[in-house]
Image 1: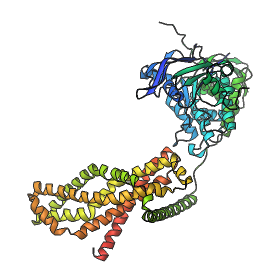
Image 2: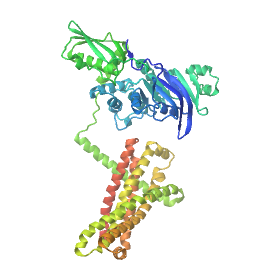
Image 3: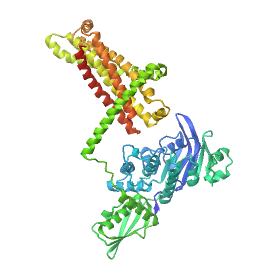
Image 4: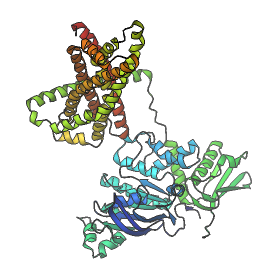
Length: 260
Length: 375
């Protein structure tokens, strides 16, 4: 029986060991150790300023960790040589907070660029895949639009299509719900579930949207600004029901969004 | 050393079944690796039925889908029957998605016919002209408000901009003005030496710098340096919705952002032009001393004999106008910028081009007007 490329058989998709991150010598997170299993939807949660996005930047290699290592499917990424790092870049795709689409390229060209860079496919085949990826995120008919011509939610979906272009085993999503209305946000959550279902993709999400956390997360880690580290780890409903840490319960029971 | 399993490459095999063909795919199909193509695999075969199987495929991604889709498309074109019943449901769903996106993905034609293009360009030109005049009108209204309520003006911002476009521009203005003086001296000496009029090099440089080149060169340098910076700053502010935030507070962007910049350039450009005149004359003096053997004293006396205060005033008036042109171009293009990174870049480029174009146009107008009034 065939299986999607994302499920590799490796024990862990992402491993962070003793990870410390910060800016200009200022430590934001210290000594973080956690792992993500293949095919898991994993959330990094916490209040504003706790270092969620910093952690993401360190995981995907935009920022170099102050200490510790990051591994993808058992292969060291954070302090590996440039050639090995480049090979590992194909392992994951990233959806940035605002979509980060290249404004001078159409949506089709945005999705095609990673394929042109990393594959030997013909122009026609690249366009077939770009059209497929855009259709998977519900953007059929918008292939030749420029980012400035579409809405914020569509930009996020196009960004997701680009992140999926190379069929990566891991997809990182940075605040996917930010700036979206609840319905669009819910559709994006459904899309994330569908991608995992279809391809077995491991999905790591940075978010503080409770609705998304409770509806799609298999497991979460919660970061805290004062602690500069992880204060809770586990399935969100278990944490909401069982955690004795007031910071965790306050966050997960915020307002009327109690877990159903 | 750990022994990792070697992934089996993507491969295809075929088994003939009457006039049909059972195509079995196997191995690892990944988009970043090489794979067989349907056309290459099929060769000259022309089966009436193609049965697709993927039982021995390990890892797969869009690479596998592309091969299967190519097979499906071939069957559709040749009229052969494509049997996908043996494929897993997930793959059949994805194939249906590719097929749907292939059929509905029609290239978006952005081309227009000639008449429409000309019409749109003309309309665009009219809109741009109108926006320039509207903007100048807003600046005038804002300036009147400044005269009436000077305490409401943002003097701090204005002084900061003066420092940015004035003091910070001194090194580049110094270098360029000195070199312009040197170049003019060499060029003038070529002709004047033949007639024994070496000393008139001082007249040539003095008049050229004070009436024309000082203001012009400073204007061009500041168009590139300050005009582009104004456009980029305001364009970026527009992209970040900072301009919108001002407008919704009832603070016109012209009062808050444009007028301090216009005033800064209107004041600093004449001062820089005077400085440029001095450096240009100094450059000419250095060449005259070295090349023609004219003493600095003789050179200076000759310069004073030809350059009058009227000539200096002509240069200062031009420089003030050039400063306002650069300020208006930079700020207008910045405020008109599209809300994107590319839009900010285009605004900066457009600000420089607009400023230099209007500086040259204004210089020609000044030449005609000063000639008529005998200045």
